[in-house]
Length: 305
Image (cartoon, rainbow, N blue to C red; front, side, top):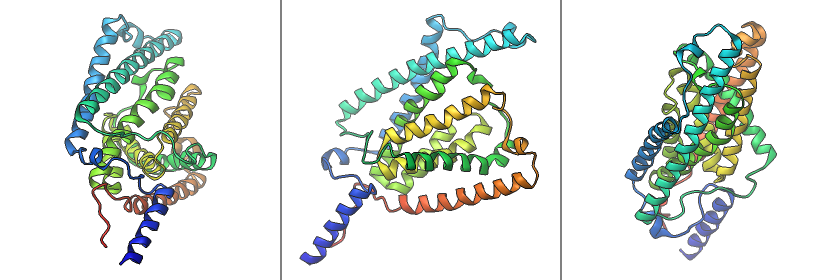
């Protein structure tokens, strides 16, 4: 019996070092986490979004009027895009601040332990970041035919330098802390890695609201969720999110933001060859990721001896 226990302790140590489980901290703090904590975090997220918009408007930050958005003048349309992006960036900054403050106060009142992990061994590994970045694009290309069938676009985000601030700086930090840090972290502690992986990706997708964006956002959320659950590093997934968004912003800057991969390659043999490769990589990776996160147990899990 003692030999079996020692073997299990060694296995625990190896799993902890590999990132599949979190080092045992304060078990009392872990037991206080409940499913309604996730509900509260999501409520804070939505409330902060509403308050952010109201405060931005009160501060005089305005969306472009109809005279701007319906103009045929390219300079006026560019100014409208900049105004739109400015409103989004300032609203996002205010919302993020309010949300983090509300969650911080709630966490203290609830007596919750440390819920976020920003750095871990190898969190800035160029190889891991490259793999994650390429996988994000493989997944996006794989689900593109389905996304094309759904309505909506992202013109509401605006353009110009303000778009870079919101999409590359603010959104990765805000969304990763809320959806990977808090949402996935809470669900993992209660139900385990697989539930955390799926639930956080679904929440991440549906808050984007635009139907054509929800599908790729859900699958991107699966990739980002895997890297957070596997490596326990918000720093890593924030960087991946920012790398993905800055590429999208670059494509918008050269007027390719609304061009699909199918349209870009012309839909011929080259397109279908690349698409088949991306779809195969995405499918194999998702199955593999699901298998790995399924091994991550909840903090209530007890080894049988």
